[in-house]
Length: 227
Image (cartoon, rainbow, N blue to C red):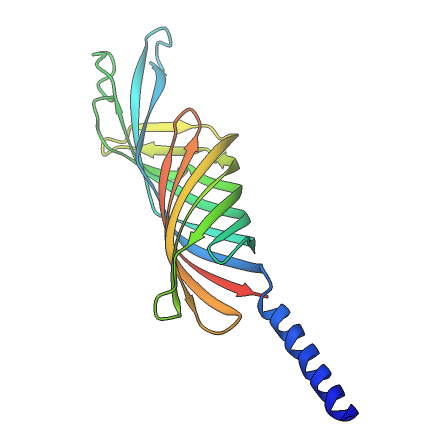
């Protein structure tokens, strides 16, 4: 009887320990994705090289090439439905072309012509956010749709660059650095591969609250390890 009791106690202890491990609320995740910044319009001041006293204000419409975004996060499950994350990320992309426009007749090169990027104008962005997610009920026990929001900040750098049109006219821009507040919305589905591992294809919308208020769309694939 004593041996049977010891066996039962040991089995119960093993079960409790295993259950505790299986129920750990912590997880880590990483993701890689395509970064698609929306085009935006900025104001710029121009002057004649031969006569700097002749100036004008023009609108600069930029378009951007797709870039890449990398993220890593530590998450904690508050319940079976709610979880929070602390996330860091890195983004890199470049401008594609420029269309400057001014109604000033002294600047015929500012009539909406396309100026293609010759070099530079490369953007790099480091970010940190706090995110909150809601997990819906699993589908077929393996697929868990989710939605989430996040807020945070970024440190940005833009390299110097040059743009030229078909006539050989060139615009040059100096480098710049700064910081922005940011917000995000995300929706995706977590697909369980095993007790610990899962993948999560997702879409994310990002808004950066600076003077330009640039916006971007992200298509990403994440990998999660649950402890």
